[in-house]
Image 1 (cartoon, helix red, strand yellow):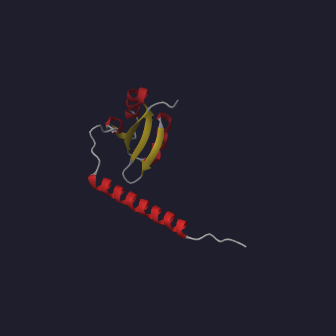
Image 2 (cartoon, one colour; image 1 turned 90 degrees about the vertical axis):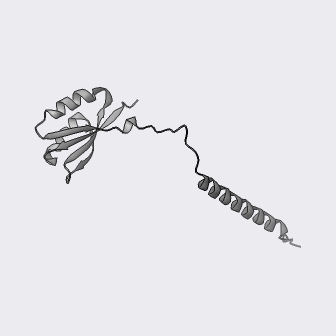
Image 3 (cartoon, one colour; image 1 turned 90 degrees about the horizontal axis):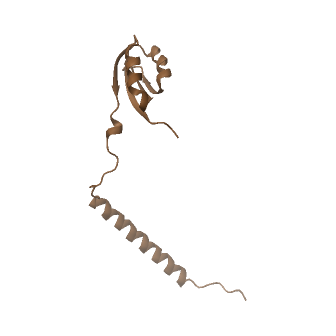
Length: 114
């Protein structure tokens, strides 16, 4: 099973030195213009890893990601009335089309070979 990982943004002085962060976790993205590294670190070692990375001479600041704190499932979410209406219209149109196709097939005489 895969271990739980948390996102971390590491602000660096030089992006060339950012490759040295590979030993602390998985690097997802390196921004050369803004001088930061987006990476994933094991959740159970995150405090220790952040303390170690802060001691590096090329690291200026470290920010944790709060994405894991955002709820994904919403209990009180109400469906959009406009979308429901659109879905009903599409369903009615498809049903009418299917009826016309089946009625056209039934009206056509079959070819009998003699």
